[in-house]
Amino acid sequence: MYNDKLQEIEVLIRARYPIISIISFEEDRVVNEIKKIAKKLDKKIFTWSAYRGLHAPDESIQSKKRTFPPSTQDPLESLNEVISFVEPAIFIFEDFHPYLKDIAIVRALRELALYLKSSYKTMILISPTLQIPLELEKDITVVDFCLPSLNDLSTLLDQILKQLAEDSRLKVVVDDQTREKLLKAALGLTLKEAENTFARALVISGKLTEDEIDIVLQEKEQAIRKSGILEYYHTDESLNNIGGLENLKQWFNKRSLAFSEKARAYGLPPPKGILLIGVQGCGKSLCAKAISRQWSLPLLRFDVGKVFASHVGSSEENIRRAIVTAESVSPCILWIDEIEKAFAGTRSSHLSDAGVTSRVFGSFITWLQEKQSSVFVVATANNIQILPPELLRKGRFDEIFFVDLPDDEERKEIFRIHIKKRGRDPGNFDIDRLVEASVGFSGSEIEQAIISSMYDAFYEGKEINTEYIVKSIQATVPLSRTMDKEIGELRTWAETRAVSASVRDGG
Ligand SMILES: Nc1ncnc2c1ncn2[C@@H]1O[C@H](COP(=O)(O)OP(=O)(O)OP(=O)(O)O)[C@@H](O)[C@H]1O
Ligand SMILES: [Mg+2]
Image (cartoon, rainbow, N blue to C red; front, side):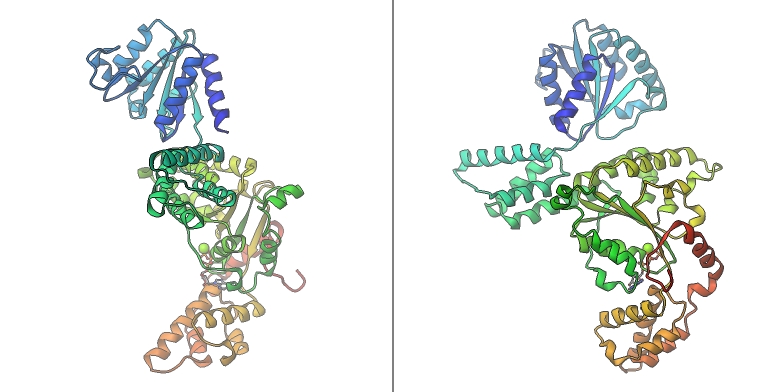
């Protein structure tokens, strides 16, 4: 993959694409690679930074003899130098993106692009974010310089081990299985981050074994948290903690090995994802958590709301980065809670940001449809009114499940689960009576009723019993009563569009 990117960049340069924007946090790595390309194509190479202006890459920071005057710190001045330079060359601009907000510079770049097309000079922008003004979209070609592949990381590890053996005569042997796990754990880190992490693990323990994999995983969690939109979600929930929803559980169970090598060898494509639609508090989020345990895959929570929060960068860039990060961690589960809320704006044209929302939504939908990677998406929604219909089209998700209020049998299980969770023996309770008293209650309301009855009993210095729970149930108005009409509509809607998550009589 990495070599493909280099080749792509080389082709673009040879085909005289005027301005190439490379997105990467790894400036050093990119500059080094472009140096090689420049050498191969016999072109001069120069770099620009706001601090140093235009300079030759090997020019010392203190050097009195400069190729270009210090006035090239000024971006417009540096663009003039690019035009005046007569030999074939590549000009790498580092962190130029803040200047793309200046209309004078945007205009200059447009004219420069036109000029460069018929020259043997190329301008390359390297920055960690993608922020291209509309006016320049046709002139700038974007290359996403992906994070290091397994192969790159493997080479890096070899280098580190070799260096270690030379420097301290410490010979660290890593068996093949541990090595593979270590490298996989490091996927998603930049080369520098991976290097630091491996080095840290070696310094802390002087070895690389299963134990050190945790150090690498911690580092990766850090990296993901820094991205601001994804969160590593730790959970102990298992399918056993879910009452009912047998259809859905069976679907999960059948796919337990879906991401294994064995499944690939058998010719199975990896599952894409599911959309869970349903009544509030009936276990949608719970399912997302449980499936991560069931499949032993990391769970990444995707906060789509933050995609549109301006303080974390442009929305388009945010969604792109979230997807890239999730893919670098794959196989994994990407959990998107309340997906309809984030994309609600796509339908209402009166919203001022409808354009941005639609674009972001569009790129997300395209990714869902075309994705080849082992990122399993679990999206949840409970408001069908604002759910964009495009999400429901075939090919986006493997299945759309409807999660309804639990029936008697399901409530029985839910009571047992939550009574046990509070350290009590369900055998000491009259479950049938509880089930009868709680018609129309969601799993979440049942849980709350048990907790509040425990408070009552505790306050009175007693042990909880059936009576306490029944009382607390009777004091609760379930959502199903206040939202009767909405739930009815939801059911009608789901009848033709979704599969029931529960096994129901006659259905
Ligand atoms: N089927 C169930 N079995 C066991 N516990 C349940 C079930 N459904 C809900 N609960 C309990 O209620 C809590 C809240 O449920 P959850 O967050 O999964 O609901 P949700 O469907 O995601 O609701 P919302 O639409 O409001 O996000 C769970 O953490 C769990 O403790
Ligand atoms: Mg939820």
